[in-house]
Length: 474
Image (cartoon, rainbow, N blue to C red; front, side, top):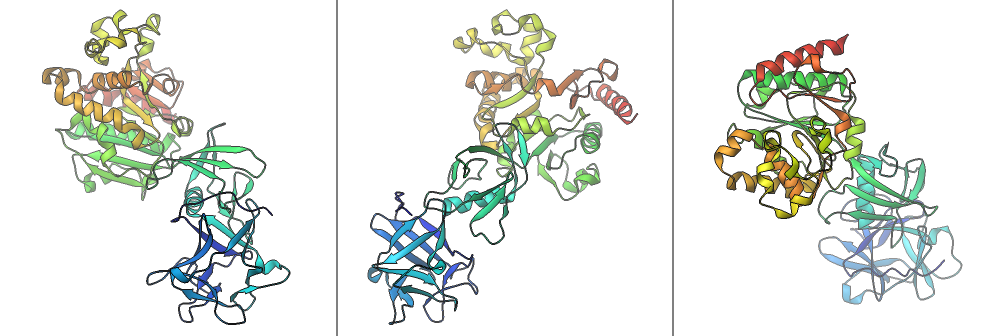
């Protein structure tokens, strides 16, 4: 074995197990170091703390204290004050066992449940397993959800413990050790935020780049009964054809008890209700970062005038791990303008996509213009969407009211995505078909059939959605 080269901060502590899988603990009655028999996750658990001077065993009972000096001649180890603690030297095999020494004596987890310092040849009792708090946090995330391999978009089941091997997980057909002063994980994100992206080093040296797969689809709805009938049809199609096993979120201007009647039984126990108002209107979709959805990834917004006609897992898998906001587009209406700047688009069409805003940003005159549709918005996490959604909210307050009332939210979102450079205008289009009525539908069943008869044309949309839903049953 080789000495660890990893230097941890004074506050970094590692969970500590015996090689046989017992958690090292402090017996609160005797003040002696022990293993097994309780305290696995509670206040009696002992951690390994490393700094530049060596290792200490730390017990956080009534107050932070450190334990490790021989209490009597038999080598048992007792709780002492921090200033009296003795430093241990650590010898570690990367990703595997470690031994802790005080001089020539090594720490041993004895068969009688005590932990002692003994000199002489090392036995299996002298080997321990330690994992950093960071590795434990990543491992818990890996156990709690499905994850997508970003290399091939395969969805893997949550990790499971390996029986008889402490600090090992079974994941993606492999066994992975989370032990060691370094650990196998790197993670994206702030220390206190949910982990949505992980990088996992495998024993063979390969790396897995992973994104959490806890999908959520959300709708916003307000207004009279016909609008809620749109929602009912959309939800029914999602249950019947979307193969969606994630969480549903509905922001409505009506109470949960009313909305519950519209939600198919297939979503029982896995749907959320959030409050919105008619005043928020079309802009309620940009408030999802205020609804406590940080744990979900990926996230898809859908207008209520959409019928789901195929499984949505491929679409959702595409969103996982992305840093961009994905929207469907109306680009196919003007294919001859693909890749051209906004200055070459006629305003009678392009104004619905923010054409009138782009003149305020001279640099956008050379940027390819896309007609992003706000009826479908996909992103990995609410944190990834927040900047663009903040900009839409600011624009709503600063743009002339009559323009917002006439054109709605879509021009502001499309402008924000271009101005910030965070929009993806190609990935969702293969999953979306736009039609004004059921007669225009191709029958390709891409995933999302969006009936875009215009804001307020509810009766036309209802007729089209009902007719198309009937064709899906045949």
